[in-house]
Image (cartoon, one colour):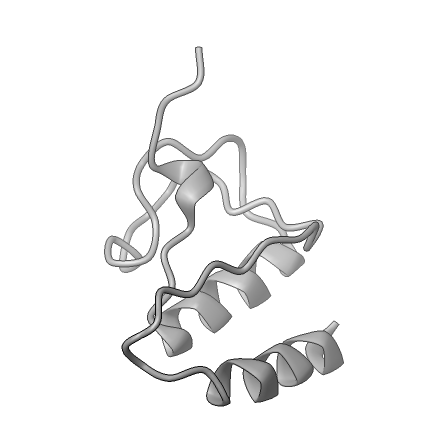
Length: 76
């Protein structure tokens, strides 16, 4: 999985900083609902507990200034 993020980082490095960037895909990541120390990349509407892929994904988003959109809105 780390290879995937390295490849994704390589692609993002080629995108001009002024462009809006959307990254979409199935990362098999559960980011959970605890956004402690992650307030800038995720809101409080995640579900369950974070898994290993969720840790990788949130770390990647933190390094690349991306926001996890699926945690922004409450789904009821």
